View 1 (cartoon, rainbow, N blue to C red):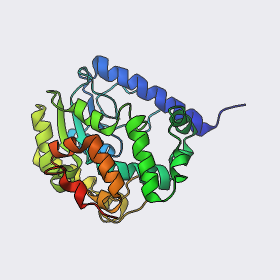
View 2: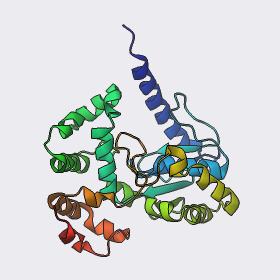
View 3: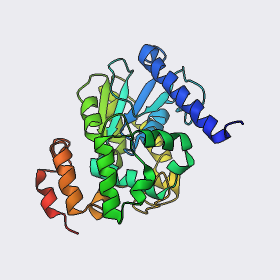
View 4: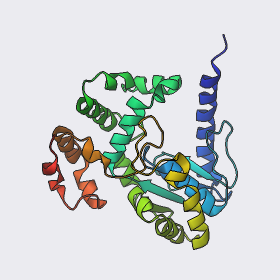
Length: 274
């Protein structure tokens, strides 16, 4: 019996991504390849689109054949010094958790990917068990525990992923929040730091083409829970975090939130109430 077309397509995409990953490591720089990377739900797709337009090279998506040409490649991989020039985007980990929650529980997308569901389950990360955990606060706590103890969104949890990508000469690190507030300046400084300056006119055109409203027909903040591009804003975690989840996240990565400038100190936990 033949495998469903959607399953075969997912297999081809995963095999192609693995092969492209090897190409990036072995000859990405020589081929003129770039990497746009970040932890899942950190704005990586948007970043790659911006990079593609600014660099005037392709950004292949959902590809089912390995890529070996000048292009922008999207990834959530661990850091490796052999990668070509990379722009890495980080986002407030609390907003990442909320975005992951809506993607897993509300969008229905994971249920459409049987291979992905099976691989998650092998690692003890059953998407259905999140929805069955109780109310939203309990569901989010269940997801937090899964993503910190046995992450499946990437090989490592959000905090470790961000830490391992910082402080490398071939990596420009930007924040999702700065991209939202000052996209032209943030992107321009990233390219400049990598020795590849891009003109402001081209940067502005890239930002306009990939503006949230232009892509979705919604203003930033107008949430669509089932959409891959749910809200296009930052700071929404305040509406979702319970005191218990706030304490757990602070114990997990409170120091990193301060280091990245998301909080002045760790007293933010005391301000969270039901």
